Length: 310
Length: 285
Image (cartoon, rainbow over the protein chains, first blue to last red):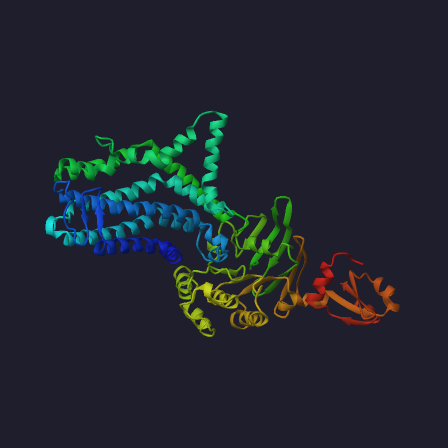
């Protein structure tokens, strides 16, 4: 455990972007919130110097909805950037120290390759999302506060929505845990590439799956590989980890849509009913993914400890 | 007491290329062993096997452990500098000390700090800001602060200037070496290390061609400088290598009758460098 803590600390030293990137985005959002004109949602309202009125062609929007939308929109920004950064981190993490030959230093220390690989996996799948979660959280709090004050002439202080905020905490934590498990095979693949490739890790990360996909289509005329990839990367997760919503919009429209339609607290609270942990953990797809992921990570550890060339 | 390092039929192939070819050797504790060979002879590969950095064939035990399977364990008692300037550019000097102190049970922080205090290196510097010589000093300070039984160095001074090289070896011998430690160093620059070694191993094309302590070398090997007139007589004694110099010829012998040799000309004890050239120049007489 002690070694793990040091290895994770080491990752923060090496990859300062883990916290710098979200901190910069947070800073920009807060600065924009303080000084800029900010659009929240498609047409709901416009906050800017000298313009503190809702758009004329709309009736007075429910401030709850705006608050929910704001909180949610910030989360989505962070989530998108985090996914890209995390994928890049996993792809680079075992390659970087081979490229600069510092692997010869790290391997001279009494650390097993299992510890090394697992520490990097933990950073990529759990620690980075947690860092983004904390920073996004602080940002949304700051933004809710700022907008409440700036727009207080007509929305009062009601932009601060404790129950929606609390829901987002649960939503984020649920997302972090379930996505980490769901994407374990993807993370395992990226790390294996990172441990094997001697150059062009990005190319190696998608060329073999692409070749497999095209090969299958040409030789057998089927597209099982494509279906598996699409399911794992796009469609599978939301349908496994969440209940489908009535209008098919899923979790992403939960707050916005239901909130707007009913304009009421009961509807907004319905976010709770969208998460589906029982379904997620009962789904064979979840466990097959975990199995494949574990296999790829074991392979990564083997490559890391046994490969002869750097 | 079992040997510190024990290799039997140690073999490593890369495809069809045999980098280490059934090498057999043992290294006892308290020695400073030079693993010497030309470029591409298999030195680095052999060392990587000792350190658990590569797969290998044959039997290999280092400090009683199987290096590849038990590398992390082995690194509690052994340490190595496998190349110059491999500390990553982003790492700060104080971070490096913190990290090794955090995970290495035998690391003495005060010792590292003391060693670094003798240099011009600042604690907050990142490795990328340091010269190659300074990076090596940091690495050496980190490594020498580890209370290890075995210290392995692979071409530790490549790319360093003469001053940095000299101070590197001085620090190694004066500040580090004692009877509880063993040092294995590879180099292709024999002259640089021959004065500090207790043992030498020559490796050529993956094979160990000489494995001897320096005392034994003095007993086993002799060279004689002869005039042309005595050349045939000297050759008759079975020289394994000869070299022409200034009108005379130097012939190298193994296990030869010194009394007979001294009747032919001036008898010398070959230096490690001489022997290296003699042994590795290939063809015998």
